[in-house]
View (cartoon, rainbow, N blue to C red):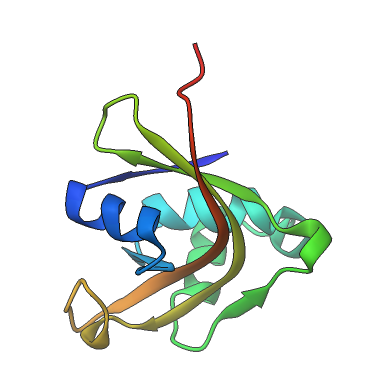
Length: 121
């Protein structure tokens, strides 16, 4: 399961349903975690570097079927408070119009079925 540590502001907005998309910079770190975890059949024969080149351009998008939506965990920093959600779509968009406000491509991770979960012991 992919885990996103969040600042309190974003955690509360996601929990309330006000925010339904999480943004992360397109870097090899997130490419390995996002793309290779969820799209291994699509990119199985490529090296991580080749996958990064393929998905780092604007316009990459992958929609998940309702029965195949993967789960992710959204944690309040590194505390034990956690929200789980299902990822409905991942795409690469321009970061200028996101909450990151950067002039670079970013992953837009769309999620639904958000609920707060007790931290596993």
